[in-house]
Length: 304
Image (tube, rainbow, N blue to C red; front, side):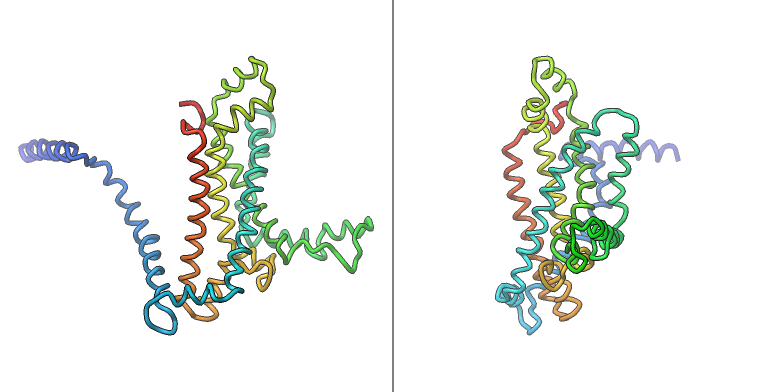
């Protein structure tokens, strides 16, 4: 028994050495479960959907589903409507999160409570967020009732803050700002405070410290945060229905894909629209990544 173990030990050791000589690290096997997970839940569904998009409902193999989409101006318009929501929401979420994250960098009483309150909207979910918007900003919501009480709004013509473009945009901001805040806070935590202290000693005010030190080091993180928030906003679906106008100004591209699948039972067109969604997102991400590559290339936080 001992002799077998002694023989197995050198053999296993020599195998590891042979693999190492060929550039193969046995610890890489630890990523095998994640690789299988990605293959089954991402790569296979993507390839299946891609193949399905080239099988038009009327039969045959070709670009029929793509041609049908681009031949319909109503369908093509969903791209612009989605971009019109996703881009402003992503920009606002990033820009609004920076000053909040900057203010919460230091230590002060109540910081943990305030940080918790800021991220609560993430846990609410889309339905609860939409319900809250309807209660607060609906035609009979608290905002309109207050404005009517002080005679700033006519009872017959309340402010239209939901069931339109603004309702969906507000929903994307409510759920997007906390997400962007968490990401930007993590990037800010990596910036060495001694850099700002040194600049302050040399006479730089807070504006110069922010523009010359914080912003260049934070810019790559801002680009990454923008990309993630854009992807989340571009795939908006429930909000476009619950607090938007799904037949008009907020008929986003994800709704077009859903209707092709669930109402028209045209699985090829639904897959084609989903592939187009992915391509549009990749184009935007490539543009942002190209801009990001022109920024600071060192460690994101400046500690390295």
